[in-house]
Image (cartoon, rainbow over all chains, first blue to last red; front, side, top):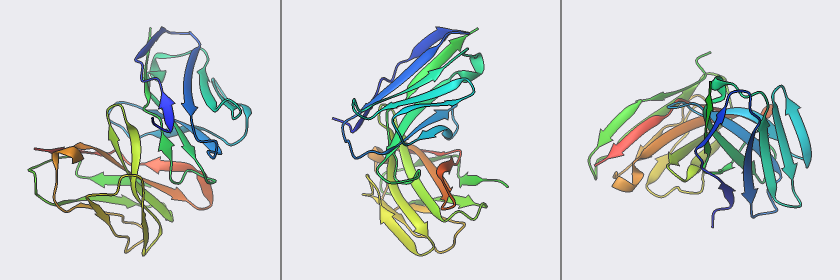
Length: 112
Length: 113
């Protein structure tokens, strides 16, 4: 069993919908949680970084962490076709983005 | 700033051949790393470096060598390529002063026949 599980999708929703992307993890030692966005044939880029249970909001994006359930989520409000990409969750035992453990990634398509 | 650059973009190798994937960054970042991305597996850490002259193994280091002689460059060497090393390889860098944001290069697609 992988340390970090992420539904690979694909996920297809209409423009304007609220999107929910999720990851579960098995090791409670993970303390730092990230979401990356990866466009086709590009490198991942950081969307959100958080290290505590609760919600963190940045524009249309909200990252949610529930350490007691070992569950993290990314919500995208008012989704746009430009949000079509693969979304990867990542986690670390140590502060910062060093030595990340990634989920499999979820491919998301926003239909106009 | 060019950020993180990788060469080549695409490479085909025969089993047993060797090659070096190049990675360079112009942001004076102390930390650099190599990941491979395979379908259904996400990204997995191969090797990393916390500064010039210092390297360490990640999750999947077998079959790969690295060295860090300068802050800017972090090449990844495949000594004897195997079909299992067919993958997309990403180099990344991070500043000790801003450890939240890791910058990834555009990737190198490697096909081993």
